[in-house]
Length: 348
Image (cartoon, rainbow, N blue to C red; front, side):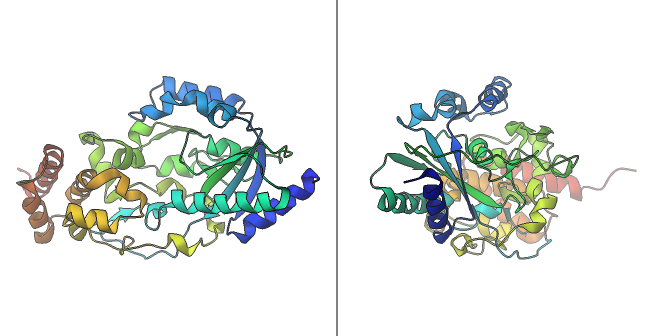
């Protein structure tokens, strides 16, 4: 089949499966590979050792999946109607993690897309991904015309950035689409909004300072100097996206990603009371489950320490203190000390 006609059929099939955008890229990574290596050399990946371990696979798609000559890149919207809350006792969880695990949803739809392509042209060799392997997702999405890399390092488009990405590595000779131009201009909203100044320069993020890294990827203690800056965020951070002017044009996303178990309005005290059994049951099918119950409590302890002291918060911290692991206990003790600091009158 003519490549142009095949691409159009793939686009139609992707749209019918709920993808907001689809594009095509070659397997060339160009200067993106060198930028990744410089980022790793600077240690900006922190404890994410898998980033360094699989750098060669990221830079060479054919090494990850032999025979790959084209990348089909897709995006799916996940923004939901937002509940407005301002209380510091309300937990803040990154929007992408409030609903179903996007890894499974996007991969399942990509598999269906691959099957539809097979129905059109017959069997072909492929592998589907969604943040599930060493793939340079933002690079391929930008090369496929789905947007550009924003100054916060995420993919940004004229429809915003509230989108999950996915890819099909394949052996089909598909003509690459035209990349979009960068439309960030002189805007620095994301750099200015970052609570920990993790965006150290346009397009450069030091993960070691990023709240998403601290609450999700970091296994041990959160550095004390950064704890007050985390506020009531217990899983991820959306500040660099929330402030972006392009997100005024974002579309509401798939209902698959609607908040579950009241995670968009839950109180810190209520979530802190979850047992390991409740955590595992309610977080089944959620990306949050991967951090485990201990890190969940660690994060909430920090958030409680950043709340205004009250009886409910103090009681929740004290009830957890005695039988907690050393990691959780350290963060609870910090939270209690924060409250004591607030409540102790300053000497004249």
